[in-house]
Length: 331
Image (cartoon, rainbow, N blue to C red; front, side, top):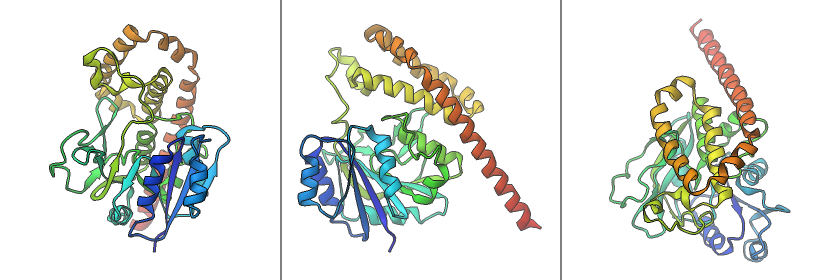
């Protein structure tokens, strides 16, 4: 049987974590290696793990290292041929892992799989995989739509998202950049699109299997107070703290700079500008102080350009290998 390593990054979510782990240890697939990377929780999460889930491999950080660095630590010690990066606010159906594995084996080039993620209300869809929008956002297929059967067909997708993606270990090793699977300069936001975009550049594919079901409590850890102006309430961006707004903006621009080709960027520029106008009008009117903070931390721009050079250099190298292999086969 194929060993699947499940990595959960936890920070002060003991109640959610317990439900998540109970669903993991009830899976039809075996063996499963469960690794929890705890970002210095103070709510008793570590004590609960030691007492109730001694089979979990617990890695405790001395401080909160956010999502990307913690996930990278988990992946680096994982032994499985497949890796699931699981949010702690998720509960899985008992055959989730089994169904995800069926999907990843459909095609040799499938490197990431997403199941059907249902909202906690059990009626609406949270995610049926991600597409890359022309505005260069990751758009969750089916988000907030009634689960009426529209997304019951398996299909190829651009990204498996960040809630419960299954990654092929071989893909992760191939697309690793500067020793990192997830870009640790991100912290959180856009890291799922970044890794998927890079995977697509290297010829890997994403796949959606609706038979892999899970239930998600979305956004509980990142949202702050709701806006007072009614029409703004439909935009997730406005719920974030100032720190998270900065992180989202920076990571968006880094993701585009690192992964987008010039031709596609130019073709999609009207949609990109449309999105930017909405965001920056809001910032200028309600949070002008964020502009100076984003400029002050402009070092991210240099980092993104350096990593872009390495990504496209590796992509060209892989393309040359493929061409040489084909030439040898023809001869």
